[in-house]
Length: 375
Image 1 (tube, helix red, strand yellow):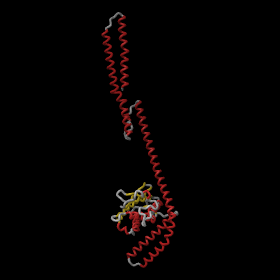
Image 2: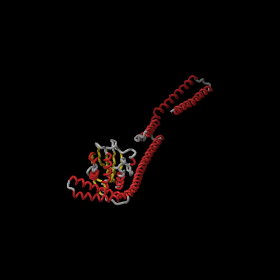
Image 3: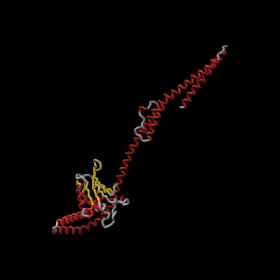
Image 4: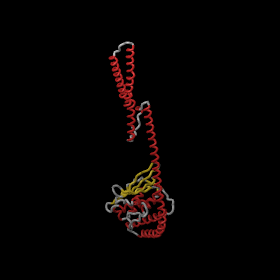
């Protein structure tokens, strides 16, 4: 603005300086011809010329500053500044200059170039975000598979030990099962027969668990089928209910009757027995509560069912939580817990292509959630 004003001022002074010598030359010419020029008229002409040039200068400045500059310079620059401010604030809706605000001159070319640059940057950002999302998913997948491999190696090592233990258990289990069957033949009291029937089922479950331990040492094909979850949970609770403490705990099975997964029923019962026994040991002695609920997760092409076993106990200690599925990790290192239950459960769940996680509930207590392929 100052440069424009200075330009018009210099132009006016130049015109004035160019016309004054012409007036003076006319005066000298008149004197040479013997005429007497009117000096006062010459001074008045100079003043008039000065005033006219001043008015023209002021008019040109006003026209430039009031009409030309605001319309063709200030407005486009203001539009670019507002768009840049929107870009700094990450306002995507206002960071591009509107086409109606772009003139057809050189400034308009700059504005269109800016819009193209911003649009290309946003496209690059979207491509980078997509690439970052894919990398994150890949990293998570690799991490999950690495954890599964580590867990598999750990379980195989455990299987080598458990194979010999299972072999030693089979002989006394066979004797125990035969004894219970013999007692059933002679018992007459209905209550006694019920308890013997339950003891026989427990013995059979121990035999199945013993056989399942062998799977950690050798690969054996497990028959899978569509299995309703609610009956599995109920059967597992019946087995856990032998413990006297189970009568003091309120058990709620909130799994819908039509929820099903794909798996081996015997192996999955073993999972829920371990989870419910863990919850029973953690539940409060008085007013204890154990709940099981389910929800459908996953995408349309790979639906899964998540079954959560929750208790109102003290929760899992923070130092134990990261290693809760490690072998021989237990919060109750006494005769009732060996720290193998959750490790075995994790191995079975992984064999079914699922996952198992542990967390503490905000309202108190622990939550162990198993995710399995939907039936």
